[in-house]
Image (cartoon, rainbow, N blue to C red; front, top):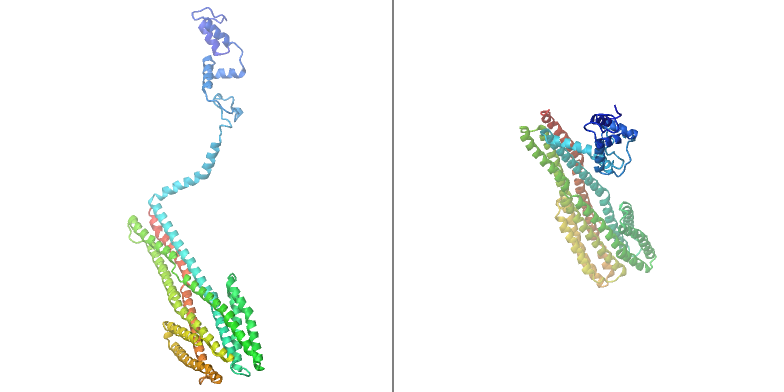
Length: 542
């Protein structure tokens, strides 16, 4: 037998092993030529290939034909050279280039999003079931209830903190500015009164003056220490007042020294000190008082507004609870779920609690606060006007000259006092017996002062200086002038109005003191009641 199948085929066909192959029926040069080609030496690897594939030339031609029609490979670098001798080594090899970047990108996408997408598909499949829908509904309502309760708790806590800051910081700063303003005006009025009569100033007059200056100094210091340091204008006003106040007191002391010595120059010093107070210091104190009182009013209005956004969250949670119970009744064929009913009850309590607290805070902070703060400001302005009018009277006595336009200014002051009294009478606080007495004192003192002022102006215009002094300094049985009676009654009403205003702020603070923690506790308890109530329904599907 020959070395391959081709030799055997030639022998059978020709009938002889001769190289000529001419004998026999099928002998022909074509077969001889094939046999001659088969006997040529071949490489070792081709021999193995021949043995595997049957060794026929036609098979080799088929392999060449397949390779010639195959798609050309751009990179012939083999991935694994050990597979060259495998039975299918003639197929297109897997090259490094064919392991493209697309497969790497696909692997990254698969590793990144494959598992989450798989989890989402399984989760969506669970949600499409009845227990999945019930569970998803409970989760959504739980999140809504907790979010609404937490938002309301944070809002109430912030409101309570702002109210506490208002009553402990902003309002005291405004009151200190008020004390500074009124004390400076009182000090100027008392200082000029001491110059009406020649000689040594009365001890009571000196004590009242020193007390007014001390109150003004302390109020300025407390205003500067308690106010917001970032408010440049406020700090500038306080600094200017503190800088000019020693200059004023120095002029007053110089005037007093010259007055005791009988020097006429004392009048000039006193007039200069009073002009400095009324033209420079008091306008700054008035601006400071208006700024601080406006800050109190603005903060009060801002914090007394209802909490619409957090309250709407509680109402939305209640609506979701009602709708969920209706849907659950249709699905489970049961009318009431105890857990959902308990959660609804607790959320109703939280909602009504917040609504009641907001209503109480609004009533106290809007109506009550405005009822107290309005008369407080108008009464303070009227008191300052009265002190200015009194200072003008005493300066006229010191200078011994008539007052041009004094009647018009005095009448404006009386009108301002009457408006303040009328505004105060509209408040609930004015209906108490104590304040009715104070209002009566103000009217009586105002009438008496007007009568004395008319006499004072007549004596001063006629040059009767002694009669004018007697009229201006005339006292009642208690040893007080009509102006002193008026000023004392107005000061008491101002103090009571301030107490009433603070009580309204404290009422709003008390109304919000327990809301934050209570609403949060009720929200957490409602969530727990939901899951306790839904548990038996979910167990029915197990």
